[in-house]
Image 1 (cartoon, rainbow, N blue to C red):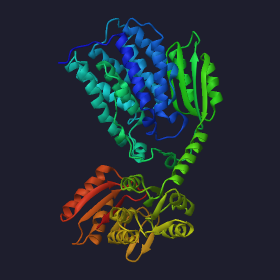
Image 2 (image 1 turned 45 degrees about the vertical axis):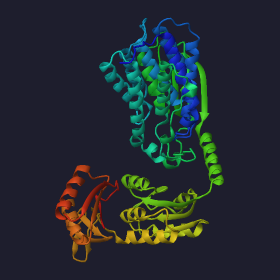
Image 3 (image 1 turned 180 degrees about the vertical axis):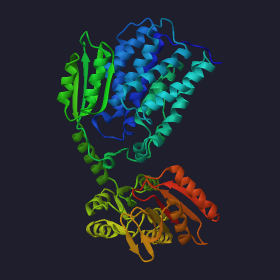
Image 4 (image 1 turned 30 degrees about the horizontal axis):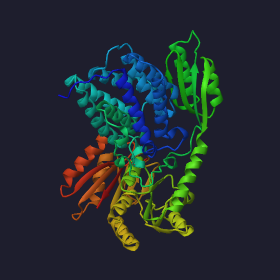
Length: 551
């Protein structure tokens, strides 16, 4: 066992200073992980400034006890909290301090782990709608693992810090799979990385190491080459323009928790990203709103206002778009780009996972416009751009875009998303454009599809007497099955589609179909066609219960 060394007020201060220094040293690396380029989106900067405020408060106090030191730490963090990440960090310290507020003697590993857990609990309570995949997740998982480790080795801080950092790195990598925006951007959560840098600083100070000589490898945090990430193109316009922050200090003597809860609800009606944190001495307020004046007026009903900051996120977005355009102009185009039309969240995720640059929403009942497709094409800086319409009604519009564009745009006449997926899978980045076009078209043509939906009116079609509401199956776009059961329609449709030469059947289920029902259908198909591999995927398509792909 490592030699036991408890953490007293002096060592705690050194640890916090080291954590702040290591975060500041890597501030830009954390900023590069930002998904949303808004004023409170510079996570590294906001967390670093929050930590610097905590350090100033801590250094300004001659703390002889741990309780006094953590009180100063929490107060400084709250006073200097900036943005969502900074406010959440201040709440981690608030809970940490609360757990140790009466401690006169040095901190033990068990007490330190319990304080981390208290900090995590406090931070979760401060956020109205906590999201997993953020700094909150990293703090929670680290705290839970720290509790277990401290219970096993109650006098081993070295082992505790190793578990904190190992656990943190493990959950940080998983944040990308928890939030679609992170996965799309190819980055881990910026706030989580910032928190682990602080914890790494703790460990270095505990060991007596110099932070200046400490190198933290963050190269795997991002897949982006230029570090600029703009996710707003996929989430639409900014709904609330003004990032608004202020303090309520010297609150009125009769202020109650009920008053604060009512205040929080009033703010939530004005916008989103609402945070109201603090104690009976001072409240820190943060929200995004189009009516910052009303937010300030509500604050005045609680006490005095201080530290008011209102920033225009629309202008920040414009500045970031200009930065992106400048980067695009100054960087050479890549060899290939791809635009795909998709008709469901599941299909969209599949296309993104396969490397499609831009996915345009659209389908049978909502064809994207020429402008939508043109905007997608022009957003890609590539020598050749392949466009997959994935619907017969969209092919012509895509061809018009190709004629209008000054870029080399190749339209692959894919008539459904299954053909589009097959085409993308056949793409080879090392092949010439002409060879890729040939390969992708051949792969798409090999796919045979069946779709299952319902009839919207009575229809007599060849030998099929179709009634409104009945389940119908379409083979390559033609109605060939009329049945009362979704499963029976699917199995009858498969009889028309599958041949002895086929090797893969994919069942894409729609947004109104349950996963367990889709998996049950997949099992039935696999039993009937043992020579084929059967996969079940979430397509998320509207109106169509299933899209069946055979190749």
